[in-house]
Amino acid sequence: MKKVITYGSFDLFHEGHYRILERAKALGDYLIVGVTTEHFDRQRGKLNLVDSIMTRIENVRHTGFADEIIVEDHVGQKVEDIQKYGIDTFVLGSDWEGKFDYLKKYCNVVYLERTPNISSTFLRHDRMRLIKLGIVGTGRIAIRFIDETKYVSGVEAVAAYNPDEISLSNFAVNYPVLTFSDYFDEFLNEIDAVYIASPNETHADYVRKAILADKHVLCEKPMTFTYDEAVELYGLAHDHGVVLMEGIRAAYLPGFQQLLTVATNGSIGDICDIDACFTRIGIKNSREMSDAKYGGAFMEYGSYTLLPIFKLFGTEYEDIRIDSILGEGGIDRFTRVQFLYKDRMATSKTGAGVKSEGQLVISGTEGYIIAQSPWWLIQSFDVRYEDPDKVDHYDSPFIGGSGFRYEIAEFIGKINKTSGKDYKLTSQESIAMAKVVEKFMGIRRQQQGW
Image (cartoon, rainbow, N blue to C red; front, side, top):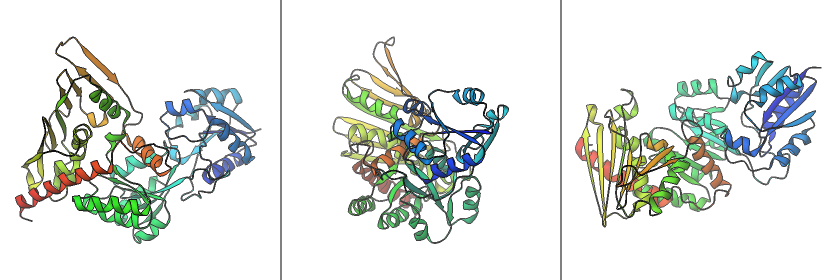
């Protein structure tokens, strides 16, 4: 008898799950299916689970393909199960290709190609639907993003759009999605929601077209270059009943939320000053290092440094000053934005091709908070006081190297109305950032004579 085993969460059971089980069953005589527990899924960084384990087991059983169903609840169990049950073939979807090659010493390992654009038809009542996601732009950040979607329940990346056919073709080699280099409307017809990771100057137009097609939108920063356009787009999303969210990853990380809580709970007294710095020596010909009109330090990193300022001090500052040092080709090599509030001050510092200590310091009357570089991927921070021997250390690690899965989970939660009140990054804060971007762009136009 040839035994086959496969594992999964099988949350929000859909046609893609059905097909994987059907094809796994066809590879042998006896199929064992491992269903993960909620606790184990959280440990391995799987976010947004909706169904209980009993519901997920019952959905697998209902297919009729599983000869035996087991529960996976700890690291290393796959090796144990393969040996315990005398498994001949281990099967998983191609999204995980290569990750389980270490099991080849125990049995045959097969990665089944995922079928793109799977149906959102459920084998149970449609309590919550699978969100079919499309990606606009297929560069570096889109690759990191799509790798993280598989860790978030309830979403499936099914399509990609890029007018650059070479970039799109290279992307499609590794990701089995429907591809479009023309006819943006046809691309939108295949999806429920869109992630926009195209060049900065194209963001607003793609956002508008997607909203008008009644699609939910997650857009990389900066979403727009003007205050009025930001107001327009959020108003348009409200009128069409869709989610519009700006992708500033730090806002959704558990460590950043914990930092905000500590900063406002009185531990450091009254907050008087915030200093946020984000600098990077990038690749010479990359957009951030060469595009004088839409790249440069502030356009690339400014949204991150504005985030803690607006979260803690609000958006109603009394005065603002922006100063930049220009580099080769006219990019802003280093930009300092200074905010004056009533009895408070804040500074945003960004650098492209300039390196500084990329830390976040929040100064109060009783102490200060320091989050070391890279604080925009925060996993720990300290609270320090006048007594140098007194230090409160906080650890809040996240799973995954980029932090994208927390942003994706928030986006899907908003679509399904399961994420609660919108507070991690509000539309008002996003609009306030656009206002600063607009002022920066006005200064840049004067400097360069556009």
